[in-house]
Amino acid sequence: MSKLPVIVGFGGVNAAGRSSGFVAFRRLVLDMLEGQKAEQTYLSLASMMGLARYDEGQWVTSNGVVIEPGSVKKQLGPLIETGTLLRKLEANHFDGDKAPYHKSVKVPAGVTFELNAKDLPNHPPESWEVTDLGEGKVQVKTTAPWQVLQPDSRKLAVQTGGQLPTGFDPGAGYASKHHPRGLMMALYGASDTMGNSGFDVEELKKHLRPDQISVYSASAMGQLDDFSLGGYMKSATLGKRTSTKQMPFSLAEMPADFINAYVLGSVGRTGGILGACASLLYNIDAAAADITSGRSRVALVGMSEAPLVPEVYEGYRVMSALAEDGQILDLDRAKGATQTDHTRACRPFGQNCGFTLAESAQYFLLMDDDLAVELGAKIYGSMGGVFVAADGIKKSISAPGVGNYLSIAKAAALTRSIIGEKGLQNHSYIHAHGTGTPQNRVTESHGLNEVAKAFGIRDWSVVASKCYWGHSVGTAAGDQIMTALGTWEDHILPGIFTLDQVAEDVHQSNLSFSQQHRQIDPDQFQAALINSKGFGGNNATGVLLSPAVTTQMLTKKHGASAMVAHQQKSEGVTQKIEAYHLAAQRGENQTIYRFGEPVPNGEDLNWGKGSLGIPGFDQSVNLDLENPFEDMV
Image (cartoon, rainbow, N blue to C red):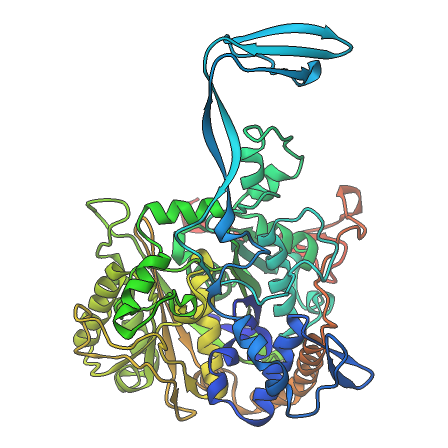
């Protein structure tokens, strides 16, 4: 019997805040929250952003003013709201008005200047006449014009970013010196996931063989800042030295390597599968396959993407992919706007002009259903399946194709098989890729609408969360999954708040779009389809099952008495989760970073008859393997 991949933990960070405790989700729907939920969300964000701290039993602002219960929104609300979600680029990334640039300048002939001899180029231009002045000095006279690159800056046409909350440093919780931002975020996200699961890493290992843990994680674009690929690719041109860390840190699968080495200490299956904007679903598909097949019992899977660097902005801009400031303003001039509203730059399925770049790290802890029931794991939901499809023959590599029609249709078909035809038609909804580009609004809406017609779905509810935090490239589906989990927790379907009017070319006969948040019944949605369309023809659609449906499936398989025992055990797990949330809210959570711990080597292994023991694991690797080709030999 196949194993069900149960989601028992999730965590991470994006422009809306920390994922655990549903903080990031609740930031989207703050205007729907009341009482304790609203208060705790504001406090959590204020703590992350350095606006408030917990001190001797009470909350105080960063300048020492006491925050009375119920007054955090009044005191800090505007700073929290303007320092989260989409907004104009902030200086901790780079100044969009003064992005680094080198201007090519032609220097005329007849210029004379002095240099230290050691500063002479290895190969001076032929137009240079060099005279030794002694004492380590030389004189240079130019006999013809020559080119130089003068450090300069320029204003970028695109200045919107889905940045982590203002003031939050993803590397502050551990010794992160010289780490690329994407790897800091990966460690933070993986650590947040473990805290939100209620399981200590070493305690969890007691129940697993060393080869029963999988880790799948990557960055679709690799690490691109000056501490990684971006630094070593331009270091020579800028006259700088390449460091020993820049090249290895830049590798796309490095988030998985960091998690294996510094968070889990895992020796199990690992990898990083790249599929452009569908990458997270590609990786969660691999993790779920490991669990359903029995290859692994636990999988930590996710993506970390930090693309907010000038070169990436310019690369996407020249492709006409990004929403430029001037274009956004043009859309709003009819309403009397005179300035670009960066908070409304992303407009899925409306009148739009391009997508907006974002940074995000999202991770999920999957566990096979047997182990989840045995350990009393908290059930956040489960993965019913993921369908991946290429586009086939295309006019250009960036043009859309037919692959997404196939992935959506198969996901709908699986949903129908699991929760029934009425379940698909009345109790499922779509988390659209929804990038905010004119092309996406047509092609994705057509695919969704055609599938809805084919399966008899009249008003398929569509959510497009990128309007809040932008497009985090490979992590995008993780933002969508995290949002879906929040909907099941708080019974709110986020609206597409920038959708003033559905564009005329959007296909919507069988779809339902809403600008407003929608309060839903607890059992209204049993499944969410998570859709991704990636550059180059990478399409994936995942079927995410609700906690209620997951629990029903586990009860049918394991029996009521087993689920009663699970519930009893889960009380202790829940207490640990709540303790973590309290610590995280107060800024007391630390990123797991096991650098410098004793490193096992070959001499430490324990060889047995048909087994191999590895330090750090109570159980051994089974080497008594069956021949999978028994009928062929």
